[in-house]
Amino acid sequence: MRLLVVGAGATGGYFGGRLVQAGRDVTFLVRPRRAEQLRASGLQIVSPHGDVTLEPKLVAASEIAGPYDAVLLTVKAFALEAALADIAPAVGPETMILPVLNGMRHVDLITARFGARVLVGCVCKVAAMIDDAGRIMQLAKFQELAYGEMNGAPSARTEALDRFMQNAGFDARLTPTIAREMWEKWVLLAAMGGITCLMRGNIGEIEAVPGGTEFAVGFLDEVVSVVNAVGEKPTEGFLAAAKAMLTAKGSGQASSMYRDLQQGNPVEADQIVGDLLARGKRAGIATPLVGAAYANLSIYQRRIAAP
Image (tube, rainbow, N blue to C red; front, side):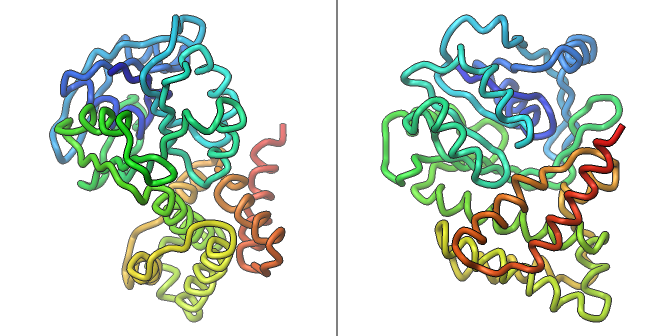
């Protein structure tokens, strides 16, 4: 199997790098600046599971000569449409596209561009960032990639994909419930992102102030009410774990969106919060806290975009 990883940032670089380390056929589609950095210093991973420096195969969009068996799509959601144009030469009738993007809007865009057959559901769990030297820094031990057909049915192609992903230095899991897991991830991202960005603090800081816990629970309830109406209902076990995570006393946890905001970087407000708000409005569901978070983030985005 030949895999094209779109992006060699924290997520694509980590999982793609571990696959390269395990001897799999992996090529990275990267922008010129990142390509120059990787050629000069290699793909460097600093991790509790072992550090490694690799010499990855790189390709530019103009150099893609034909279809790959699978495409792992790891770009930020606001860069998706440009990425879909870039990967078009890599997508054939039998290609699988595995997106590990936030929200669910990417599902609509991918199927509109390439058809529903190419899409294989995918969810990743990893805490990583790129440091100033371009190294991928894994911040916690968890590292999982889950995937499967969106309709939950078994297939020869996902079984082949699973063989490719196994024993590559991270937890790999073929699952019949990937669609629900994608919606659950959106619940957690929207709630964590909205809570920490609107309050400008981490979970422990929010929990410690009067009304903080009630605010976090109320925000989660709004998000879940939308997903229950328009998507796949989360399990009770997931909801209990999410509530505990979002109200944990002394927790230093915050969303990646909040970290981007603190650094003055663009954020995925439209895809993580705005799209959820829009779906809720279409379903007639009132979400005042989600609306406040989106308005707040929209002001921030306009401010950083201003000349």
